[in-house]
Length: 466
Image (cartoon, rainbow, N blue to C red; front, side):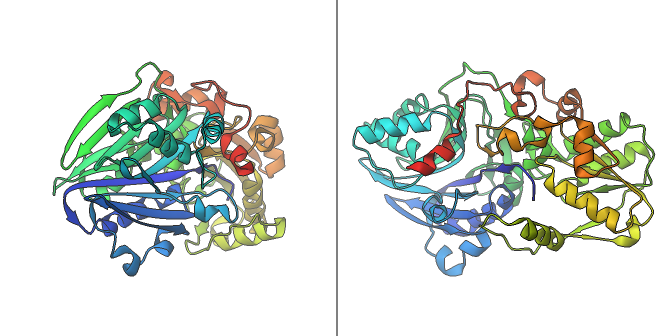
């Protein structure tokens, strides 16, 4: 499907006692599967011993009773991710587990470091070796280099050397650490279970699943050090502006999550309402592109006083492909993934709501199929402004030349996708729907205003050369 892709989902649990943490971490990864579907892994620690398992595939494909059984300990971390390409996917799976002079260390990382290439080259010149092609390994190699007997001190030194958007969970010096970047670009929340376990996760839906009471979203530039059931907070950089990713509310986060205290579902419903308030067209029904377009379509239909109808039915049992599909294969996969209830569309003027339009290729096929099924008109509404710029902070964004919103005006995009009309959510309406001040959001994919200087080439692609 033609969507932006979040790189990773993270979960961590610290307990006061040795226990089978693997199952709990697996459950946490299942709740975050939408954030990464090509690799999964878990590492657990107890009294100096690190045990881990990881592989390519969905969490449910990677783990079973046999390989979960040995994952026992007092601290554990888990990871789901979108891998790079080809045979490198397996070796790049996380957690990254390394032996260093302080013992065993494990790390899970969501985000992207914009200075990883230069740091990697410096470390190689100094004699350090790398076993993966991901920027996450730069962090553990720096930690190994900076470690002088104090894990927190080494972590602070390392964090002051890296730049970008990131959330980290580490097992280091028999403790668990949660870290959020100085702009708060990537999400990380914290909670406590009824058994007094401290939990870190990318989203609050994981806290809900693990029955952990929400404590807080980690602040920008914050480190939380956890030992048993106790934790301490440190700030390693408070000089940057807060820049929470707006696209978490548009698409990435699950609708039952809260980010920065704001309901993702309510924000998406409000996006639909604001679209309807500025739309003067006449339609017979409102239909979502499932599943991400559902809340906004609900909001639109309510505000416009129109029937809300499911015309597209999503098949949730379609397998994944690791190959770049041909045009014919894309058509086949779309037919497999989304079916049409022809009785609901025949001779109807359909208002089709989706969260965003990236390349426009999938939307064009959907519009064509709806018209082939008998729709009289298909009007497309996007619950985000046009996506015009690439992300450098942990979101897999196509190059600018392939972003349809960066290269064409709205009327031309409507013609290209075959829609009878097209409307995007207004930029300031998006800000209103999210409910966070503009100066505290990163909307760079819409306006090109990055919270820091960015490289011309994204490091994850450069790393493929190593």
